[in-house]
Image 1 (cartoon, rainbow, N blue to C red):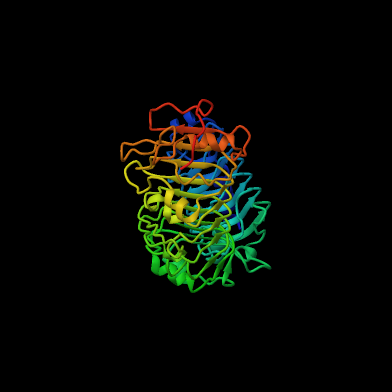
Image 2: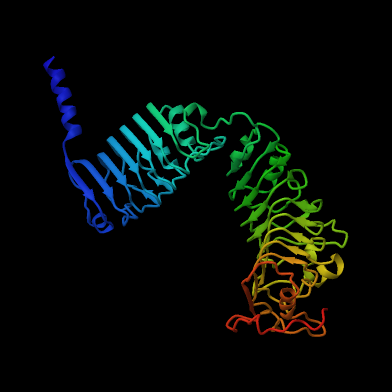
Length: 466
């Protein structure tokens, strides 16, 4: 009996002895050299943004509060034996630097971190016994199907189901759509039209949606190629919200976009191998944005009938953004049928490559763009030397930026029309004729880099239109 009491006293002493240390500035963090037994380490202060150099391997109580840390990195930390409290860190986005934390015996409390979205750093844990509380983190935990353990609160589900965690879990007042029980994580009640994020070959192969209709769909990762997108098209038929495909090695749009109906925004971003646009040849109306960014190999084939590539699109309810637009065909023919863009119209080129001299084919064959609800940006094109194509504009709702075009042919957009060029005077004409609807719009016009901005107030309207 005496031996039992002695053992309990020894354990209690181990958990209540040691140094109590408070670090309240980045300078104090940088100077601190961990040594000996630490009962309580408090890191507190908005000036503290990086604690990754702390050589703390084991601590009984660790408090990280009211700091300016964005990504919590403590690569040396291996064990917490009483309590870890992460609270009030308004800039904290993720815990991804806790990957070496393997043992927690006691309480882990994560609360009042308004920007926190990622707790996947907890997945390195091997043993966690005690209490886990995650509360009042406004952006954390929107409930989605757990296609991988890094989504929302899926890390918690993984720790529990794998047997790493034993104890009590409290989930409260996180993201408005966050679950409040472990059982509800990844389970979407009611509507089977939900959002998914697919990040790998394994994700797509294992993908088993609740129906063939999804809300928003994100497909990302260098493992993703055209064959995997074709496989995905056999599992879904309709994307009701935003479709984002980024950072992939897809080459073709055929086999996906001609089989999956997209009813909202379409975003193609950072797909360096993407070439074939033919999956879009049946599209006439895009009910959100069409955004193509950093897809430099993409072809923009066209036909007057609009049955090739993007050339059949007549209306985009949201914004049209193409950057860089180096593959757009001469005369802007790639969008020959398009006459209405409800949001911004942004075509940004490259000073080193491009086929556009103007948008006159778009205008002469298809009638030109007539409606832009937001801003007009037409800049940095290799060979542009005129504004033909914009004569048909009847409504322009935002600001205008037309700058630094023509570097590739040593020509310039003239101020006034010539026999074969439409000049900057067109913008003055649109302003004077009431086509520009925004009160006091910002208008930035410049011939080339380093040249002064053209003053719209002293620019004359065009005398005739081409």
